[in-house]
Image 1 (cartoon, helix red, strand yellow):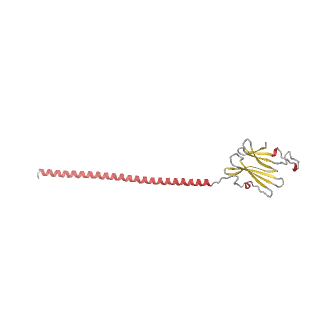
Image 2 (cartoon, rainbow, N blue to C red):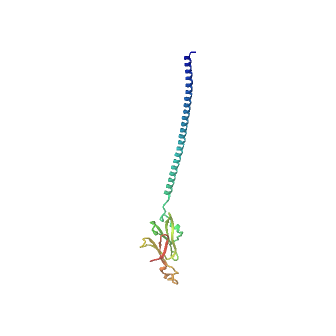
Image 3 (tube, rainbow, N blue to C red):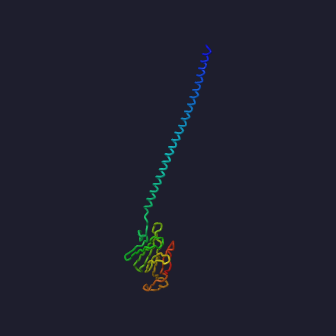
Length: 217
């Protein structure tokens, strides 16, 4: 075989070997890059799926919080609007006193601010016209949206109970005058001669926490 032909054959064989090797290397690299790219795509898809799930969960939790807040506000509003303001005028005070009136007895109520809180209080007077004509009186006010008894005094013989305005505080005070058959001024006297004295002429004034009894001035 001529040297030229041998040379050509050698070149062709060498070229084939080199080309095949190059293709194998390039193809392997392309496959590797493709696999790496697919892995990255899969990772991104997984991250997106996790993010979507997290967003859906957060949205659901936010809606739950909003709903609970709305329900709570609605309940509070309903509770607030259902509370009725209590006053001494819309309360059956006779039931609170426990007094039982009979024929000839009568009850009177005077509404004044005795405690200085800006709200009406009530002075309830019961006059029992039986033997002795005894008088009972009760003072009621509103405490924590409930009508409470603030003071009471009973069995005032021929008692007279009224109100005046204190010139110093400007508050209404309760005054009571009655006859004490056992007082020093009345001991031994017949009923027709019984009189009231300073010991049975009292006033009842709010001191900021309770009613205080004192002699009338």
